[in-house]
Image 1 (cartoon, rainbow, N blue to C red):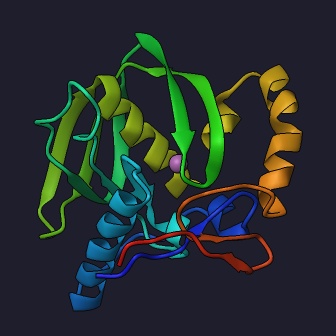
Image 2: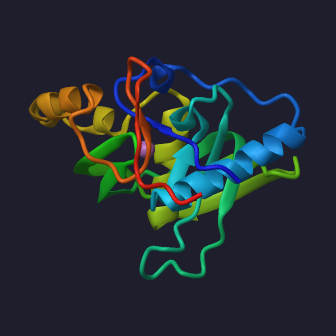
Length: 192
Ligand code: NI
């Protein structure tokens, strides 16, 4: 398994809508393994394929490192679609591996239903709430080219602009390897 470099704001691939996966072969499976390894290496709880430079509609999620969620199983979601949103909303402080050191309270629907294919290409439908529903929404947003900061008020977004610009210039510190918008790579202390 490989640790893949993580693309950060404002790389063009992070604004592209992901392509539907049409078939899963050995290389797709090993890419998914690499995504999971990369997420764990960076101590993230979710990762979308475009964050590691792939156009495919794949996301991996593992919230088990979070206190209270230790028994939650990891998810691989291929071509996920949210088919239901609850009216009830909640807020929670989100972060993102593509936006190092940015953390903001984001309001989202508390519960969702998602249809997707798992890594064995079995169709699945899940009802999720709480942190799991939140991470799923955050990752599916990535597959639609949306950063969590776009879910904030216009005022909060304006206040974040200079911080985001610094990330895009590489004026940031991540302990994992990142790719800047111009394609340059800044190495972190990845464990292989
Ligand atoms: Ni993210």
